[in-house]
Image (tube, rainbow, N blue to C red):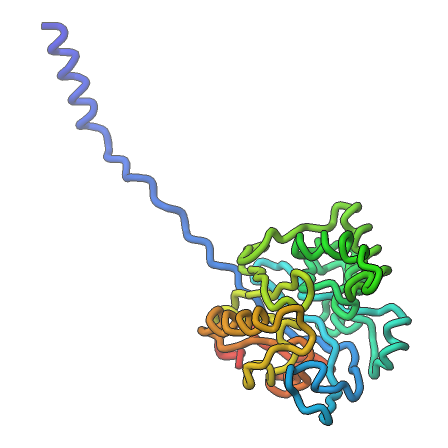
Length: 296
């Protein structure tokens, strides 16, 4: 009898309890998006188009910009794609016009060098990698195979020591690694930061990469030197400086697919970048803003 009473009391207690709703899922975090700016820090005068576009007009020359790309994240992160150059030997040898350091150029956006959180190096050529040390607090990202090749095997060939890399640039990058400020990208289609994915392909160098960036317009591709000019895309012509033309064309095709929503692929040295997009300062254009209506 006592057992039945106890069971009844338990049931009454259970029925009398207020119903506790199932746990509600917390608010879904908004995906990180980026504003994108192209920042010019100099011009290489009268550069042969045939050295940029395979099969290009051998008589045509362009004043081509040297630039870095600034990604301002909705999470507050400030990322550079490539770091440019500043060493005097490069400025003098290439007769760079209207030169300022990449750090000074980026400061026109109100960004100080120590505010840059990350630098993504697309490849090891001096004009894209020399300036990484201008941004002292940044984590530098590079393809693991690119780093290993240009700090090792590339210097074993007596006919082409370095394979196009510069010894001083590489030394600075090795020091960066020793300081714990270098991270490797482990191959293709790697999201290294929220909303930023690195892709291999193009073979501009041993393991060059390009970058897909999440924006309010969809994914925008920062091709860097895997596409030198818009002409590479319109002609479906490989870049003139590649280790594998077929790979480069395949990369171009993939870039079109990845950027199908935004329709934006940003080449590495085309002066037309600075007429296609809205100017927001001296040598600076906004490729995509923080609202759909401000991007074009």
